[in-house]
Length: 330
Image 1 (cartoon, rainbow, N blue to C red):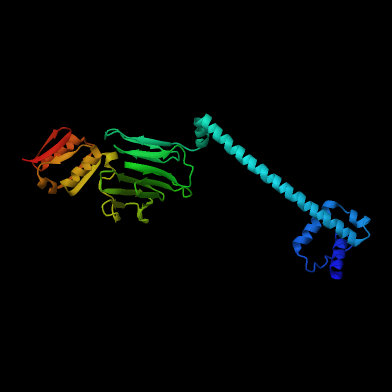
Image 2 (cartoon, rainbow, N blue to C red):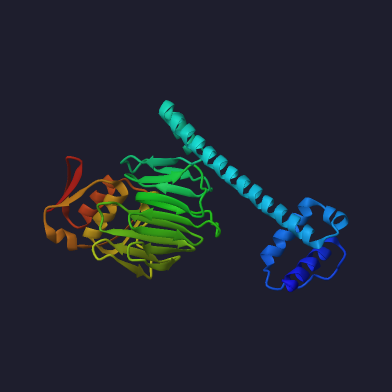
């Protein structure tokens, strides 16, 4: 008891300014001392000058501390009730507005979210659609192609979605990568102009890189490879695999330039490219026609002229029936 009285006296002397050194706290912990100090500051310095009995001063100070804790507790409970009331009021107001005017709430919730534009091209090789994306990237769309993109790029990545074929001349921004998604395939710009062919009916997604490089990724398998300028990469939908070639696919931009070069190419591949460029189906009445090797250059000719030249070169007959060209042996 005597030791506790000495500690009390030392504390009161310290708080009243009569003693400069912090007294020892004995078995009393720091939190109790802080409570005592806070209460002393709240009650003023009357104990220092009016109290001559340390025991009486300690008793009154203890009572004051108790009162302060009660007030703090009451205040804390009060604030808690206020917070609960505000929360219920806010939720109630939102529900009320939603019931009375759901369109207005939807408008508020979607305000500031960029809408998505969808560009679709018609099935005509004579009409190419070129658009400028919000970041300045230029995109040329082949026929039967759909491109989806936001009115404004606001996320870390600039993502567009492609079905069909398009040529991208990307405005490079390393801080905001440009990404083309087509199904499970992801093509990320690394400072590039490139062509993507991703028609739903084809077994391949093909990327030809003109400048820079791209990263071609299979998002399902979490696999990727980098394709540099002058090469192409193909994703096989059948094998779920990515293949990289050391050269560009012949005539990969002919659907834009209408310039074609064939070097010892079997007619099956020649006709496949013509179908993609001019969007006119070609039929063979004899399978042996597909294996004929063909070499030629064409510069901005109409498809009618091209098929007639091919037929004359290899002594074949060609006719047009129901909108498609039919090749047969003579």
